[in-house]
Amino acid sequence: MARTAAVTMRWLEQLQFEGRGKGGDRPTILVDADTTVATSPVELLLLAAATCTASDMVIILQKQRVKLEVLEIAVDGTRRDEEPRRFTAIAFHIRVRGDGADDAKVRRAVDLSIEKYCSVIASLAPDIPITYDVAIA
Image (cartoon, rainbow, N blue to C red; front, side, top):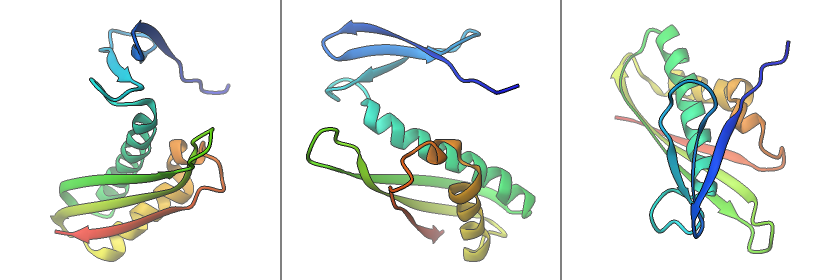
């Protein structure tokens, strides 16, 4: 049986909305297309990609016996000037600290996430180049 994901969204005012994952008592999140009071939908897409990749990395690094202390990911997305203003490139900037963390292990975790496991990245248009750099603190 296919797995599904579902959300609900409600317009509040101007270009502000609240949404939540469907089911349970999850908290709502505020989304603002004007970015005046909350994160925009486009920023949320980058945040979803970063969180998806980070989740994969945590699992993979744990399997590599890395005792993770810090994992931070900043993501920059380049967008077209014309509508639709879709992403034309996405760059991840990853900072990791932890006992046993080295460049090879971290890069292996990132590669596996980006190329195989991250469903958010896999859902993006395949012509969007995804790049990354790694800093081991």
